[in-house]
Amino acid sequence: MARRKEPNQADETLHQIEESFDKVAHWVSEKRIPLAIAAAVILAVAAGSDMLRSQRASAGNEGAAALAEVRTEFLAAMGAEPGALVFAEPANPAVAREARDRFAKEFEAVGREHEGSAASAMALLEAGNLHEQLGAPHLARDDWEAGLASAGSGTNLEALVLRRLARAQEDAGEWSAAAESHERAGRNSDYPGHWDALAAAARCRLEAGEIDAALALLAELENGEVLDRIAPPTVARLREARASRDLDSAGADS
Image (cartoon, rainbow, N blue to C red; front, side, top):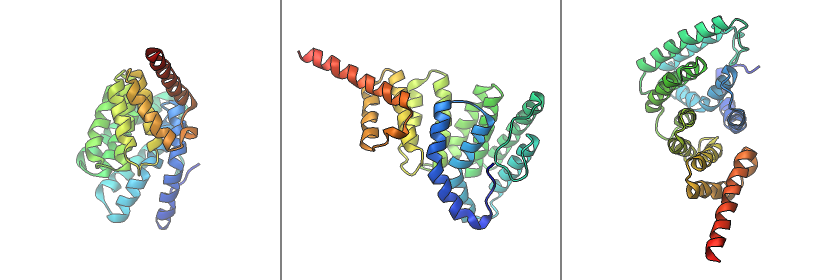
């Protein structure tokens, strides 16, 4: 089970975060399961780099401290071991639901109080995750859209919030909007999951019927030599779309 690192290990932790994110993001993207454990792992791994940098740059940041306090209390309410970043789902569903409902509101409060900070964006990201798990996607989307404003342009945290928002847009059938959100995240080359984001954008372009845009993204993935890191069904669909387009073009030329 993952444990919090000591403060003097921050640089090593940051390196591990950036190396491991792509694997975690790919796994969650492929499985697409809204489990609390998956949400906690993604949040801790993907947003961790921005938060570590922020905390190192301004020790004692009030927003980060408030976020850490609420998150610690939430983990305890869900039965996590002291110092753990993830938890096993409580045996009593009522206990889990009550904790999620209570702490969604507490995370939102942190987000509002520290608006404009990375801590605000992370708090609203967590609140949205909890609302999603409670079966309230409209509230989750509201949280993620609010968090985006505080995430900071061009940061890994912004990219993570965009990916969450993109998933909500996918679930609503808003394929073009989802593609835009995924691609915006993927254009941040410092974001460790940027190739995965571009692949998701290509998949959404296909769903939206935007074949040329989807195939342009496929070409980028091929040029980056990263197709082996992309979910095989996505790669297969993109290649099928290209083969179909080439066949149509050949027929038109004959």
